[in-house]
Length: 236
Image 1: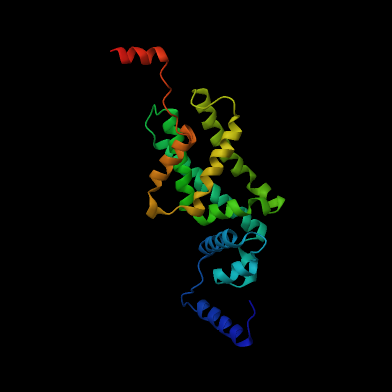
Image 2 (image 1 turned 60 degrees about the vertical axis):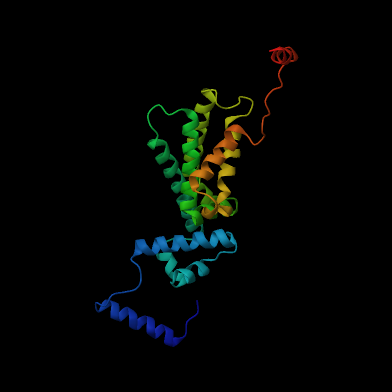
């Protein structure tokens, strides 16, 4: 962001007042770091990775472009941290929902709790998770490499849960667990774009998605009675 001489003088005067003991309006470093990440997540989710510049992040965070380098080395590092925040929020929420279940909860209850946890974590940190969905395939290899461990841990969490469901006889056996996970988690990601709490609670949404995932969307009509059974019923 360009600045004239008068602007420079005002900044320098403000810095002198701060050194003299007056309170500064600039957030402390940890707060500023979080502010930069929040702004970056919002811009990534709205504009994508390529169309979000360090200058635009700095401008909306209320700092000079060069000041970003006091907190992050590059846009790649910011992107990697945004990706981490999105997955960490969802992972923590899923684990929390699973831990809250009573001892002896069956696999359907466990899957339902995981679905609700994913949705809650995703919507609670909507801009971070929306940014994750939008930019993951477009960030650099270095950013993906930095983020890979936390992403793999979340994938493993779902694979283990779904494998337990398969071992318990809850899932069909002709479709591999990784494909089931890709289908389910992919479906769980999209409400970040369209969910409106005025149309129903998060619990209702989770229950409906769980029903769709486990029971399907096709309504199964009752099987027709065999002819002999029908004749017997009519003779009564």
